[in-house]
Every structure is written in C-alpha cells, then in structure tokens.
Length: 185
Image (cartoon, rainbow, N blue to C red; front, side, top):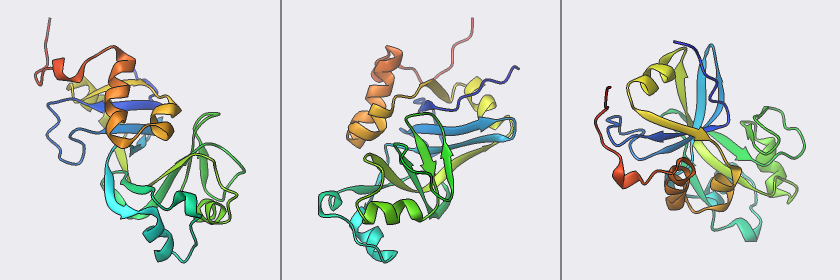
C-alpha cells in the first residue's frame, strides 16, 4: 500500500471506533511520515481550566484567557503539555506544521502567553496521539478513520462540540448517516 502523508489533516473517528481513547474524536495530525504519526485530539475538553494549569506551573494567566479549558490530546504522555497555536516567534521545541499551525512542547510558549506575548490563537492539551510506522495506514484501511485536510479555523475559532461536525461538513458528510460497518464492492 502506498503511503500517504496526512500531516495537517484531521482524522475523524468512524462510528465503529472501539478504542475509547478515540471514540467520537477529531484529531489533528501534526506529523506523519515513514516512522509513524503524531497528532492531538482537538475536541475532548477535560475538567481543567487553563488558569489552574498555569497556577500549577507557576505562571500568571492574563484575565481574558481565564475561562479557557485544557484538552486531552491523546493517551500518550498525558502528564506533558502540547500547545497547538498560530505561528509567532520560534520557541525551544516547535514543529511548524504549516504557515498557519505550529505545535510546541516547550514551556516557553506558555511563558510568552503569561506575558501577553504569545500566539494570538492557541489550544493547550495534555498528552498526544501516536501511531507506529504503518499503523495509521492500517487503521484507515480497516475503516477506523476518515481524513480531510485541516482548517485552522475549526481548531481555533469553534467551540469543542462544533469541531467534529465542522470537519464532517468539510467532507460533505452528515455524521448521523455513517454506518459502523465497512462496505466492500
């Protein structure tokens, strides 16, 4: 099977997804290559406000960001923060996915946010989603995922509950019409 690069794509979990880590999720793929894939779930908020997270790491959060929530990015390294954001200055550990989206794992991006100098749009998650070489391609072949090129607007401008339906609309599909069984011609 030829490899396809799904970097900067959304993965939409199909209704037959049995893994509870991914059931009902929309995942942004930040890196996909011959060694595997890395992504962050963008529609699974957790009961942790950004202000509490900033308190835990000893940073102040600007008042206009106090109501923001933190997301569960996936089942891997849930004690570690991952920040999807619009690009600004380079940070210590940043993967520039596209001209419109970066993923940073170093604390300096949060320090910049604390000082009011950070990215204008961002989403903080704990943990990430990872796949070994060929694993994601196998899961797609087994009808576990749909994919569509990502739109930063969906990540940064829509509430969590609207992100999955918005990605489905990008494919022209109504999620309620999807079957949980694969079809074969």
